Length: 119
Image (tube, rainbow, N blue to C red; front, side, top):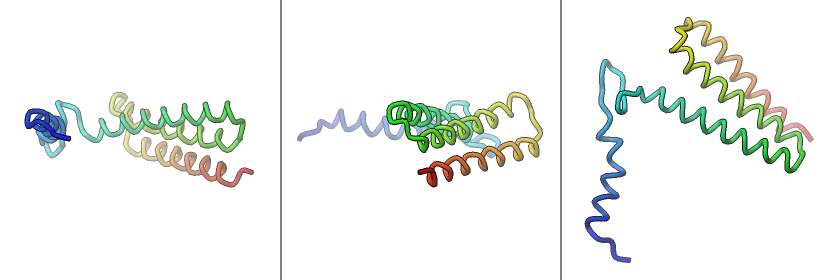
């Protein structure tokens, strides 16, 4: 297939645009004013919600309890992301957030383990 030079230029610019939008301010990288770590956390939490919803649909369709544990794990992971994002808004102390995040990580691992060993 032939690709015109104009179309190739547009594709390259679309791929390179996020790189051009990165700006370092105060030792933090931001994309159009948003902190990259917060943006990644929001996207990760959104993906966890989507995967949780899909696994719940699979559970309702199939009825296997394994999928219910996987669903719970994904939603706990999304809840952890929501707490971390909300901690910036509520100004929670870092040790409180670390304990909560660690407990939620532990819950996620337990849910995945229970899903694996459940017959």
